[in-house]
Image 1 (cartoon, protein in one colour):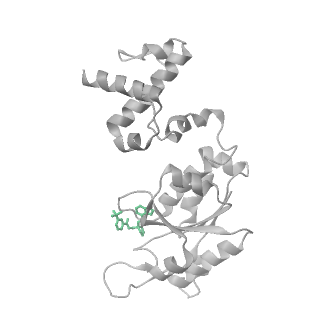
Image 2 (cartoon, protein in one colour):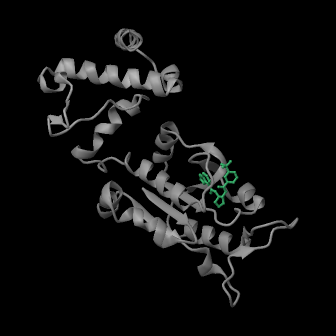
Image 3 (cartoon, helix red, strand yellow):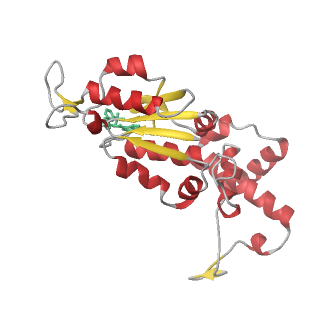
Length: 246
Ligand SMILES: CC(C)(C)c1cccc(C(=O)NCC2(NC(=O)c3cccc4nocc34)CCCC2)c1
């Protein structure tokens, strides 16, 4: 999958191709990330990339021409149409369903804001979707872009090795994860739940499902309401709730 990122900090965004799952996906040629810096397209002597806001007030806005030039160069640099995304606090909240949809695109163009953001007319004419990773004030769209790249890259066939794919199970079913344990068997007097040592894989599977259901019910009831629960799920969850309330 080809991803182009328009950013004033290409060395920040390209770090995602250096480490872990996304680093390996990049090494294997499954993910191709190219960064484009508007500053390289600023034609004035000072290579200006910000501009003053109409209406006055604090802060600056990303200068239109260098930004649009970088976007046009990025699109023209490879075949295929790019879905153009602006990472923005005004965007639709990113969730796994959106990640799965975006992973199906042949190309993504990610635009990262800095200062107070970008000119609204650039959004209206150049951007297909605004996407937000959450409600907190950030310094730029680069970390959100890296979050999106990570989530999308994991879905590229072949990107996940055996050691990485476990977390897909429960969340791809839209639930929180079950608790994880590893050595030692007893840690400061706290033992691993016995079922996990039993070797009874059916019981272990049921226990994990019940924990994913129960923890989702406790911490994220919104996920439970959206999940399609089987009758077995309902039984496991009711048993968890009875125990929790006893
Ligand atoms: C959400 C709320 C707290 C109400 C709020 C209201 C108004 C502004 C900001 C704010 O952070 N503005 C600064 C910028 N933020 C982001 O780019 C950004 C922030 C958060 C999630 C994101 N997902 O993608 C990009 C994201 C925009 C231009 C440079 C960085 C935040």
